[in-house]
Image (cartoon, rainbow, N blue to C red; front, side):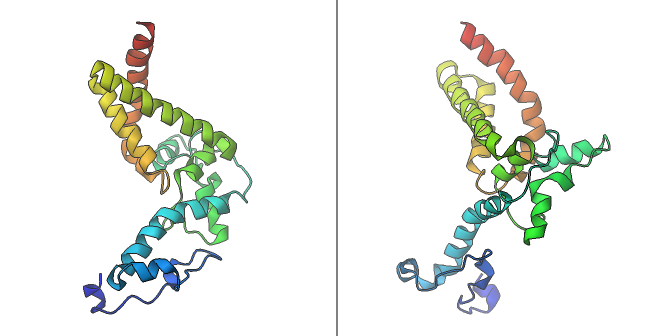
Length: 194
C-alpha cells in the first residue's frame, strides 16, 4: 500500500474514526509496532471492531419484525421473489439514520440475527450455532462422518466471522439450508438413539 501512495508515510488516522471514537496517535502500541506496519495494524483493528461498533448503534433502534427473512442478504433477496421486502425493516438499513452506510460499513452478524430474533434472541442463536459446531466436531471424531465434517467447516466459518458480518452466510446459506436439516435428522437423531 505504501508503494501505491508513492511511499508516503501513513499519518492520516481520521479515516479510522468511528463516531465519537478517535484514534490515540500517542498510544504505546504505536511505539512497539514499526512505522511501516501502522497502517496494517489500523486496518486490522478497524476490521475487527467496526462491526461491534455499528451493532452498539443498533441498540438504540426499535425492533421491527422481518418475519425471519432479514438475517442475511440471500434470504432478503429470496423473499423478494414472493414480493416481500424486509430490507427497510432490518437494522442494517435503518442504521443509515446514524450515518452508517449499509452497503459500505461492516455490521456484525449479531445485528443481522437481531433483525429476525431481536437482540435478546441472538444469544440463543449463538448457543445453537455453538451446539452445531460442537456436535459436528464430536461426530466427526467419534464416527468419522463426512457430512459432519462439512457442517463443522461451515458452522466454524460462520462463528469465525460473526464479529464482522453476516454477508458471509449468504455464500453458504443455500448449502446449509439443505445440508443442515439432512445432517441433523440423519445423524444427530440417529446417533442419539444408538
